[in-house]
Image (cartoon, rainbow, N blue to C red):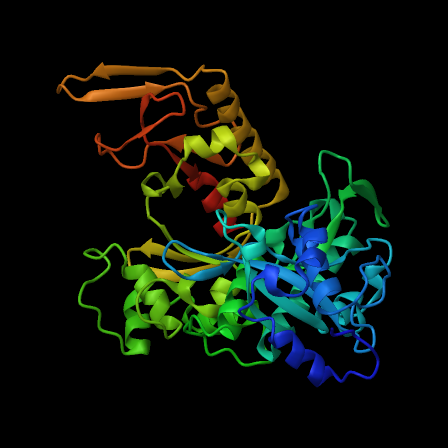
Length: 463
């Protein structure tokens, strides 16, 4: 039996860890010992303890020193899921260490507890499958983690974004969407039970931990597991994601689309009036990427950064609200706001808005914004979500179907209208009368979509 001790070299430890790959949890050691841990709980904490105790021979304890104390290595066990399209993604973020509001702001990035923790980890990835016995979960990869050199500038920038909010007395306003690769995730039961004091404000702040975002871990896993190769931006290793975005787009700012085409030597087959995806294609060309889906680029995926173009029309009334996917009423009925896709869209996602403006002289690239939702927007979204949940649970959603003068059906409902909360509205997307969904009570219902109001977007762009 392997027993971790001071005479084992790091190389031997990593070779032994790699022998886990392909094993099921039931096969990592004596089954009765494995069962002692997994019979009590099926969560990743129990799985981590089983691997630590049974496979590596390290007693489970709450001592603050590293699990592999002779090599200053922390053991982290993290689940991977297989998607419907057979690809792999991380099931969750990787939590690193708790944020101490009272002391963490003292440290520069390189000397921070975060760096001491995140640069010395042995990661064990296992495949989590819903309909599989936990004993049959398979270990996919064991690897020593160090932050990739090209990610360091962005993670350093993320660290100071979080630390500066603490220094400004705004720890209570920290959001996961503030940052790109590194996040400050909430920890604990919520509902006011884990609020902590902060040094520069009397406001209590949610308990949080530094973590690598779920999307960041997905990209990292697929890279080390050799399951997916993503196209990359040609970012210099010393430049952060946001600085690179600025460096690329600023030289094209205040140029017309025709001038941008000439500068890029780009000759599209269809122009801005014929092709709805003309502007996204043009921006992708600026980045040296074919097509329109910047979100498939490695750096965008790592940061869960979504890309949208905004076109300011000459007449303000011609501007459009920004749409998100159709509303899933079953999800709202069954899922709390903090676990919903709405929360993911606005609390965990950052957006690159590239802004164009129509003028008599042509359509100009005017601005770009790396944007995330402010705290009061999240509160408004939560109010809207929970009101719809209340309507669904109390069976008070009403539908009125009338016929207009042309014999066309007109559907009306009592979902919250524009003005119920700031920023957002709910309405059908488009005018296709055949687009219907089903409410949890079984009733046919016209599909509805969440929109970010054009008035807010214009104010954001022009501020």
